[in-house]
Length: 247
Image 1 (cartoon, one colour):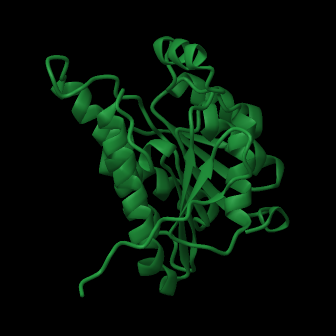
Image 2: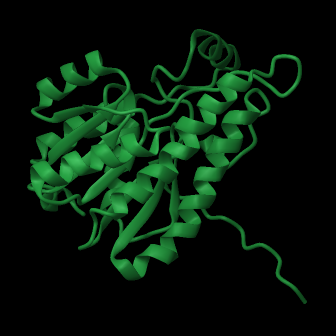
């Protein structure tokens, strides 16, 4: 799906009220797509939707029925769904020792993993003629993150899901891709994390760099790939090594 092909397409963007989701939604709308924004933040979501001429639906992606309702709205209003950008995400910020918090754990897994699983399930019901599903994972889905193991766990799960669904859904005309940015300038990055990155002199990605990578990924013909987005490097599919097989 090149930029010339986007006009008239129907796109659902979860986590679309701000950050990477809003950046992608703005550009999709500028290219002529019909955009439906889904987010738990209704105030910011409505504001962004009005700004770009999109439709907003309040959505908690950790709930299957909310994902189904968002897809149903897109299909009812525009007749189909061509692109689902499953981008909603939250930070974890705790470990598995004395700071373990069950409620925060359930929330992090619910948004970051269930939100993608439920989003794919719902989107497939409206992609009878094919389409593209892009899930935001993270470089935390490719490398270990000792400071936030729960976040790394759910993002690794998203990477595994994308790699597994790619070949499974390709015969149906549905491509599934993963977007894996490193630390980006979004609300997920709290003040403590920003201070640590500043101390380590680790550059923070600006949102537009991630948006550029999204559209490069969208224009590719691949499926089941996970595109890294790292400061100072050209984005592309991460080359996973083949695992050893039986002898």
